[in-house]
Length: 566
Image (cartoon, rainbow, N blue to C red):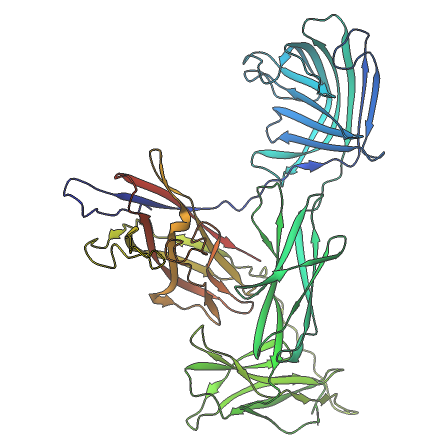
């Protein structure tokens, strides 16, 4: 979608800013940290690279060997570090020739990447020695590519390789010969999991968050979120384990851990949502459970219907949900007398049920409130007689999985309109400048036609984010940080069930110097687990603040929307 803004300077001058919505592909890329790799080389006297010596490298001996391969078998690269000394090996098929394949013999190779389209390429260098020209040959006895790599687009995991090579440097008759043997298991993908202890606490009490991350051999960092609100970075307490501390205020909180891997093209990875319920020590709301406990289940089903009633509710707009521990039992029915009730089945369990009423305000800025926690015991039926009739139902249908989709209306195009620069809102004064210098042109618009549809019965939740690139006009650039936004529901918000939270407003950097605007991934909306079934329609109000010294012309940017499936 393209975002355009009509300049007010002259009738013939048009300032155009393009906001193009693209959907990010679901796949990711990965390179490889070799675990079962050996490289041997023998250099003849007079060979410049090997200096007439023999070399052996092995990942089993602790040598650092990094392997890369493209997903069409056109080239492979090895980077080796041993004793602080670097070596590299590159073998590449000719651009116009066959790919690297089992049984392939590649003769007449020249220095990579300077070889012609009809020549294979190769280059072996190390210890700060390289060749100006290379001639040689290499043989691929076996090669097997695994799944897509995690560390870059168009890369693959090199699972197995058996190859030999011979290189001559700068026309020398002396050769450097070597063997490469790789036998790798398929590495598990990067991931992060989160636990919270305890999961039900008094409001303001400590909760320990523990994240366990698979860093796939790279460096990374973990930080924690309470909904969309960032908490703190994790502290590394042992390999791949990070901890943090939260002090949740009154109400239900949904924590996640986010993993960022350094030196990769991966987006941030998020853990599943972990709920924590913080209960007020001095509650205003009252909770009653009927029938009073403890109760004995009346039959072998070992469940009892109980009615939860909340009274003395806040007078603010909102809804009441009942919880059993951190399990959301559902939204209560509001009675004419101002109470809220919900009837649920309570099963006989080893531990008492922990019922709590939680008031969730309609306004995102409103504060949650809770009743006191009510422990409720259901004891198993002591049935010693009765008749039992088995019931059977044959289900011939496959389980329904549903799906999660992001749609943008066809041909959607947002055109930014410039606010009249003769008005204060169109050419605002910079408050921190004592001279009152007017420093920005202001453009506004609205992104519409965005919808998320979730038909998955499990309702695991989802998150929709957006990130913009810099605006460009030839050599002129306006940073994406100058673009701010405010997510909102569409006038027809759809029929999504449960709780779908909007992301926070992100102001332009020229409005708030500490803001990154939309230059970094920003949350548009998020459905918590157990919510989001159906369709939610979203809009985003946009405000671009462009320095008033910017050249006239057409400015374009790209906005990427990413739908995250936890």
